[in-house]
Length: 309
Length: 322
Image (cartoon, rainbow over all chains, first blue to last red; front, side):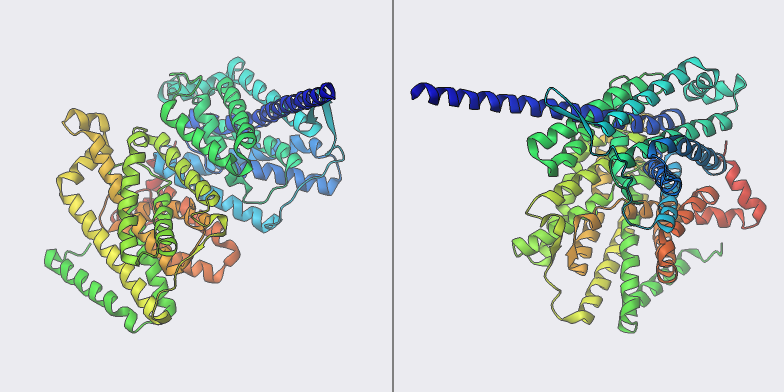
């Protein structure tokens, strides 16, 4: 009798223990997968911030525009949302190039108030255009593999999240290689380091800025495609990304892509662990607090090079 | 510009003040509310002018003082049955104190980092307000209605905001002429150089933010009692913050009356647009922002001084373009 009681208690204990292990594992995986996405959207903001010293307050809405491209094309052509990725990238690349060429370049030397007001104005304009075209309803894609997931050692990994993570990671690595290995990438970095010297070396700064903004915007568009796979969106969803964009850019270090990768994953972890410890309603508070603490104590970030500062 | 001399300007200003003071006794409710709103934004633009226009610290999230003031008054009046004016005093001083406490770490940041920090504070305070029960959470909070009927309330809040605006103008005028103002401008121009010249930047920029916080918070407090219902999503918004900056830039940053003029202009346009094109409100505001920063980055006065011919307008762009 006693023995059975004991064994029951102990199995209870074990199962509890296992459950908690599974939960911690699950939370870790969730944070990690979410972190990959955060890293990539953070990079898209960080390159404009690092290279042009412009705080692009419209970046969130550009991500959402990418998502709308995916939504519309996949609805009309009835194809899998993943295949619309190139379209979102190309569309947002062109939009970004035009915005930089005909609008932001006109005030690029105007200082912080001017450029911030300008990008906020662009943000409002883009939101309103999105509202006129797609209305304020939440739109989402619902691919057939939506609810399916992989199970490893008791941890559930939804396929969609996994694919999002992998693609975001690939984009980030690809971008880092682009900056390091290609001539165009080098010229962008040279412009970030010292615009005047770069100009003397024969680099067209206006064009370089256009290209930088276009790349940032294209990356945002790609992330929009990935985002709408997981969650429905409305024209105002873009504002929710703001703090994530800021935190990744700052924690990662200005313009540093590997830093942003680490920062994204750290933030993903903060988010999922804060849900586990304090509950879902404190998730945003935790993220904001961490962001402010980073800003105050680590303004140069994890891997910020003095190069960019 | 017409040269009226000091006396002429004083006469015009005084006349305008008396006219505006007496205006609610003849105007209809709609115009009273519109003017009250304009006065409120004038106070906000002037207070952002003190920290950003004079001191050069771009507190883009400055609206969190507005929310703080609104919620202080709301909570004190409903939960602790304070009278409006005592709650108002606590709201103003509380926001200033908060700005000093937060300012010690946050004002060490410069440029983009300070801007991003204040936006973070705005988001943080909104999330906290949404999630604690003292403030009524995301449902918002209902304040006691102003006793004495709608007409009396309209007059009261009109004169409240009008008075607040005059005080903020007087305060800014005093600052611009005093030692404080010189220190602010020196810090804006070059903080390191200012500290070399014997100005310790920390107390000055803290003071600038505290004054700015005081006025923003009072405007928020008045707004909460005026609307008699507030919720976190409404009072902790980034959008009015940006509007304040637009008003300041349009009127001329670092001038006493520029932001006031900018506030009147933008609110008037907003009101027209709200009425006529409800669906295009954001678009038009967005385009106004874009055009203002491209064509008049130094404000109206600069534009008039340069002249309004197209070629002169385009020459304004050349300074900032790449």
